[in-house]
Image (tube, rainbow, N blue to C red):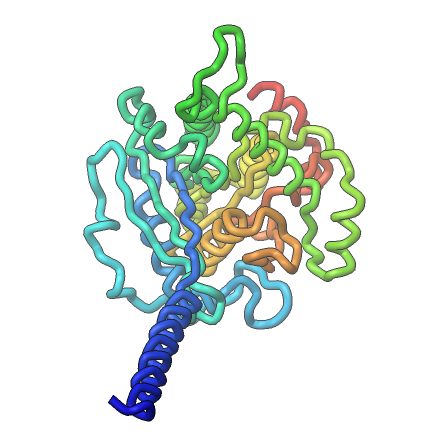
Length: 366
């Protein structure tokens, strides 16, 4: 073999090796780590839990719609266009009604240009608050997954007289689940007289993070305002987050279009609707929860719910440099289109809706 042929063979090996590494680097560069988050859906039977999951799937297919992407801040009354179209891509089996104690489905979260998958949401739907059912939450929430989870409590506007009782029952379920996480040792041995566990440390950290999120909340997402809120954190107002579960919580009141039926057939008045809203907001204020009314006749409400959940799970704050900014403003004037993001409300704002109303009395009674 000549010197020239040996040199050519060596050059070919080097080029082949270079091409291999280029291919590997290209594949690694195009593969991004996808964050995995969890959403726990709770609610009474026939409250609309499955419908909420279905609408969340539909909203996830059109992430470029909603969330103020038409320019400027957006309210939920904005028309949503293509959200009214059917979505054949979603498997109906995952969204059908069921009798299982705990069901699981998932959805991919796309960026706002609908080009890349940035996260995956695991949706866990609990059938009831029976002990045998709620104990299953320990397989969903543990010390490892708790910081990456949010909870949704679904209420039904066709039965508003059950709102408070249902809220109390499901928040108790969440409290029990949080205590189970606190007892999670993470496989580590603890002293006989020690209360420290990996789970308790995780929950305490999540509680601090939730408190900070509420402190930093602002509807003004300008960079100047973000810097200001980051430098100066004011203490939370009276009645805000007096019960801290450590989980982002959203209270969803479905079937808000039935208010007209309540008005005609049960004699509900504007004062009644305002009072119900004030009671719900008082309870949500205590837990740092968001409140939203939804209706299948107004798909924008579900788009807002979807974007808000993704924002809370991916961002950790509402600053403009966060992973998933949120741009929809609070709405409390229209009785059937209510949205109160966590951190926005206060005792004074609740009282402005209709006076007199004593938020403290409601929270103390709770």
